[in-house]
Image 1: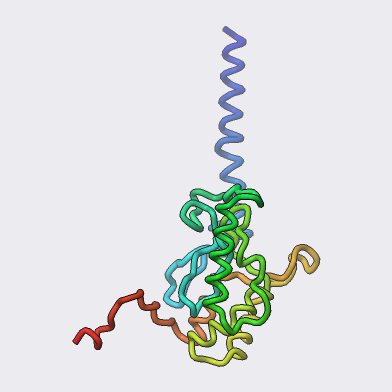
Image 2 (image 1 turned 60 degrees about the vertical axis):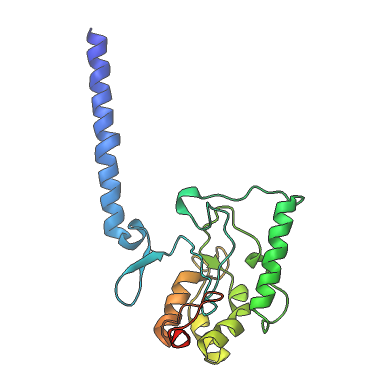
Length: 207
């Protein structure tokens, strides 16, 4: 009986220390020292509405926005189903998807310089990568400029202002956060109209 009592006491103390006090202490320290990151690195639009996280990619189909990498997470950028397609290089399904995306990107970006960047064709391991390389972002400038009816130079200036450097100056590579840049484009040039669905008519056409 004495052994059971000692075991129960040890279990209770351990639960309080590691299951309650330690998590509370770490959460409090994180909120005090790194509040933004500890709260999910949330991103807000000009109205203060939360529109996403700097850490989780989103799908952008409007030609006026920078588009990120493909995603195999769920139905695309599903944070509850993070993961890759697990398709190998010999997979016919993967090859068909690559050919389809390549044709689409070339069609949507007729004025883009050079070949389609590889990262716009390949999904990340998590399917949630929120970043592009500056080169892949610059490749999309002609399409974005045409859709927003502004000069490519003005789009380029906003993009270059949002290139994020290496961590601590030495780790990783420069990147562009797709969501953050798209919000910056909206602040600078206004929010673009949603693209019209194929076969849809405008209000003036319906009269």
